[in-house]
Length: 109
Length: 114
Image (cartoon, each protein chain N blue to C red):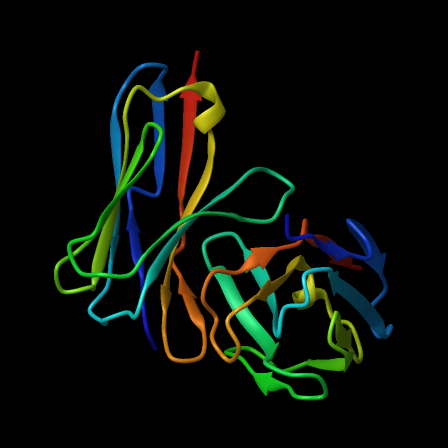
């Protein structure tokens, strides 16, 4: 069974702080995606990384794919209450996505 | 924008009932997926389909079946609902034929089986 471990599981911070979420596996993925899910809604795709070492930025969010394509990180600069939600990484296998168990982020004003 | 809709946001059913969960996508995507999401277990793949009338078992297909008669519609069927099927059910679609790359999710159906 393929596993994608995310850390931390929970994160509670003040507005303006920086944070990093990690997504790790022993498997190599064709691509890795990050999603954000708000309560009572489905996940929404944020970004896809494909190449080992790739870095993508989405406003205050920076995503990096590990050189060996086994891990990824999400860094948020100056977090805002609107960043609150469940962050999920998902690694692409030949015919399915493997989802991590998620990091629940709460940003307080 | 891709739109994936699910027939119900909340559903309450009794043990033993047959339950139909409907999912429709409007972007002509080839691929569709059904997941369930439970606390501490993440998203688990139940069934997926890469073409009309085609279906493949995911990681937890027991107790479920699916139907894909039209490209835009993918139905999940609980033949005889049980309490351990109480969960959030999420439908998704993706655009690259035959690949799960970049999935777009519906809002989910929270099913309670009593």
